[in-house]
Amino acid sequence: ILITVTGILQIKIVRNNLNGLLNNQGEILFNHVRREIDINMEYLELLDKSPSIITPSFLNILVYDEAIVEDLYSLLTEMPAGVLEKIPLANVLILDEKGNATTRKGDPKIPDSLILSLQSRKQDTFIKMPTSKDQTLVMGARAKGSIILVSADENELESLRKKYIIKEIVENEGKRFDVSGINIYDAEGGLYAGTGDRKEHTFIFTRSLDSKFLPRYRMEVFLSRVGADEIFKQTTGNFVLILVFLILSGALSTYATFLLSRKYDKKVKEMEREIEM
Image (cartoon, rainbow, N blue to C red; front, side):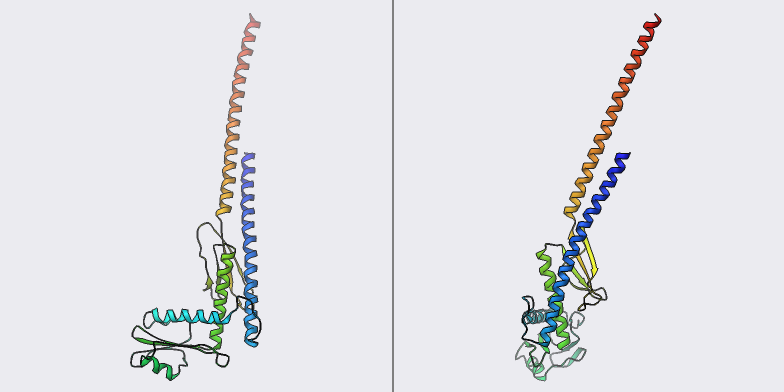
């Protein structure tokens, strides 16, 4: 019983130590990703004030603007007609072939020349990228019998850039450290950016980001438990084998003692009979 209790305690200690190692690994990765986010957000903030500032390799604003435009174009041309919820912009206008508004969200600032060029089929797509003088992004596309027009002001475009930068950091650092995934949730608990999901044999390290750029946001780091579970399984298996061996050894010892005792008793009785004779 003492051996069994000691073994169970040792198994619990091993399990706690393995969980502690995973927790430390998650915390190290969490702090690293948070630092990368803060550095890039600080550069993004400085870039708005001084466009000539030298930024880290992550922060090529033109690349992110192009990625935003590509995703928006795919979304505008592939989404079902009349579905506005999937467009991550506050200002959207959908027209029919005659130029009549069928759906509107917000107050899109769309030049008349853009509407006419799309309506007359002179072009199927129009994109006005932000410039130093005008930070507004304007897009229009013909899709499924409709003309879809969107605009994003400087603040909205800044939010999209921030999201795309964080998304790239999460993806790159997740691949670099070979983890199961990293998720970041916004203040309402919705998924903001992420590459992981809750799977079997996964250890989840979660903590608030405590960042001035992402207030009340939370990060989850997904680490594989396969290695730790294998170690724990082997430790438990070894303990069971040792316990079985000790039980069998004890049983054999008890049986041998019993046989010796019987043999001794038999000999004593024989000696008693000889003495009586």
